[in-house]
Length: 112
Image (cartoon, rainbow, N blue to C red):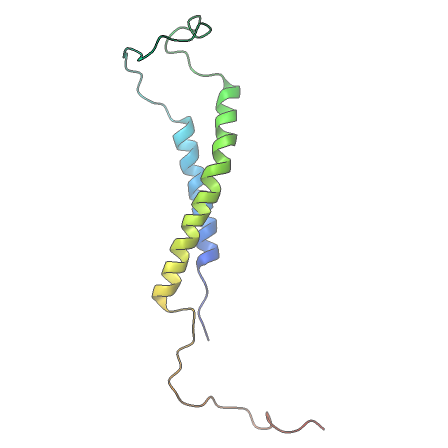
């Protein structure tokens, strides 16, 4: 009997891990080193002092937008890894040693 195809559990795990990675990426704190900007700041951004954290609505918007991309791509990577693992384990086909399979008595008898 063929073994279990591992693509689905790996896809689910890939989706979950990608969403967790997305939260760390989007909500993580980055270094705030003072560097000169390559271009002058926008006029409306001049009123905001440097080092001000972004508003909560901006963080929520980033999480929602990034979730649309991180999750499905993580699931695709998980599916690929699951197919590779299943293929390496040889789970797709039953190994045939060339001997005939035993049949139960009366399996080929005509119906009554």
